[in-house]
Every structure is written in structure tokens, then in C-alpha cells.
Amino acid sequence: MKKLLKISNIVIFILLMMFLMFFLSFFIGKKEYKNVHVNVKKGTTFQQIYKELKLNYGIMDRLYLKTKGKNTNLKIGTYKFDGKFSKYEIIRKIKNSETNGIRLTIPEGFTTKQIYERMDALGLGSREEIENVLKTVDFPYPHEGNNFEGYFYPETYIFNENVTTEQVVKTILNEFLKKFPPEKYPNKAEFYNNLKLASIVEAEVPNNADKSKVAGLFKKRLEKGMRLESDATLKYELGRQALRGELKNTNTPYNSYKTKGLPPTPIGNPPYETVKIVEDAVGGDDLFFFTYRGKTYYSKTHEEHLKKRRESGQLK
Image (cartoon, rainbow, N blue to C red):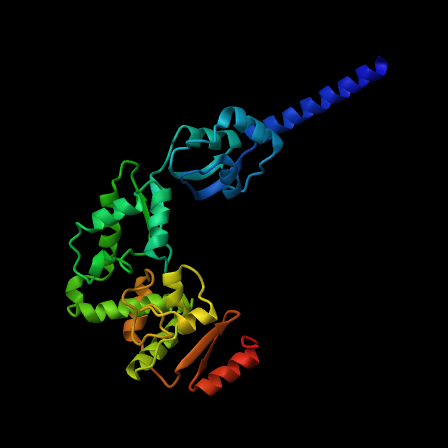
């Protein structure tokens, strides 16, 4: 009996210590954040929020949130954390829907498909709603077939919770027009071609030095009537990396291994800097390039190109 009582006391002591530790870490302990934003989208859970805020998601946290947190139907929006917060204060802020608007980030080179998916997840409009708005937009640059690829300017936008899809779309397109005022580009067809090329360059190489070289190289190939032979163009249409056989055999205007010239539309949404690089780029002697393990190699001839691919290990 004494032994059983002793075990019971030990169990009670352990439970009390666990509760005390949970109480201290959950209600008392605070973590400092400096202008940290958490985007709550459709289906976001507190577990994901914990991970984003670099908080330990322990057993007691799970039990508490299961009974009190209610993961479902969290208010979509952006929650800003600037200062010291306990786990309890973080959860209370989100449960009370104390949002700081809705933060939409469009990364450089994102496609409209990716942007539509992100907008939908943030409750800013479905694909159908976005495309319906685009049908009503009076836009000064080419957009045949209501295709606005290339014009969703990459930036971080913050919207009020009651914003409409129309307001969101027009805000993004207006940002593009601020960067590229129509009156500065009287030759809209030429601008559109530069935008197409900029979107390809953006997809091919990450830094500005290489972007300038690749842009000049592509311009030189176009002048000579050569195919661009960019994997990125077919990848855009397929939504994934193209296989070697697909590059050789797929007949589509977006397969630049089979079709000469630029694709029908941009293949993403490049930033201002890349468009300017393309506008200013001048072709040199190089006509071939490839990127392998973070380094870009340039060649004047196809034979030199193949040799560098073998020497780098890219071509087995």
C-alpha cells in the first residue's frame, strides 16, 4: 500500500512539474520578434504557425490547442509580431482575428498560375474571379486572349480584409504601369518582346551579371535566326521540368528547341531590373550557355559548349 502511495505521489509530482513547465513556457515565457509577419491562408493550422514562429510544438501545446485553439476556420490574413510575445498571446491574437491586413507576396519570376493559386489561398479571389476582372481591364500593353502573363508585377502588397478581387488585380497591374509608364514605351510590340525575353532570362539565371550575358546571347541567337533552346519555355507550358525527349519532340510555340523566335507570351513575371537588363543587353561572341551547380558557362561554338559540359560533369 505504501509502495502504491509512493508511486502515486511520484506520478502526481511529475504531472505537477509538467504542468508547471507548460504554464511557464506557455503563459510566462516570451519570445521576441522584430517585424515578423505570419500569413494565415486557407487550411493553415496552429502547428504550421508554431513552425513559422520557431516555437516548440510540444504535447501539452497540442492538448491545449485541441481543447482551446480550434485549428479550423482561422481568420485569413497577415498577423504582425513586433515585440515580446508568449505562446498564449500569439494564439489569442490569431484567435481574435487581430490581423494587419492580407499580405500578398509575388516573387520575381512567378507565373500567373502560381499567383492565382496564392491569391486564392489568401481569399483574394479565385482564378475565375481574377480572369473575369481581367476581361474588364483597359490595359495599354499587348494581352491577346486576355493573357496578362508578365504584367503581375513582383512585389509585396498589403490589402485590407474587405478588399475586392478587382481592387487587388488593379493594384498589381497599376504597380506594373508605375514601373513601365506607357508613354515611355511608344513601341508596345518591341516592349512586349523585351518582356518575353526578360521572363526567360529571369527563369534561366539568378544574378544580374549572368542575366546581362544571357540576354545578349539570346539576342544574338535571335538575330542569327537560331532557336533560343531554353528549357524554361517548355517548362512553363508543362508546369514541370521538361524531359530530353519532350524537348526534341513536343510541337508547341513554347518549345524553343523546336520553334524559332520568342514564345507567344512571357513565361513569368520578371522585375524591373531584369527588363532593363534585357533592354540594354548587347550580343557578344557567345552563342551557347548552360548552368551547372550554380555556375554559368559560355561558349562561342557548339563543339566548345559540349566540351565544357563534359568537363564540368554536366554531360556524362
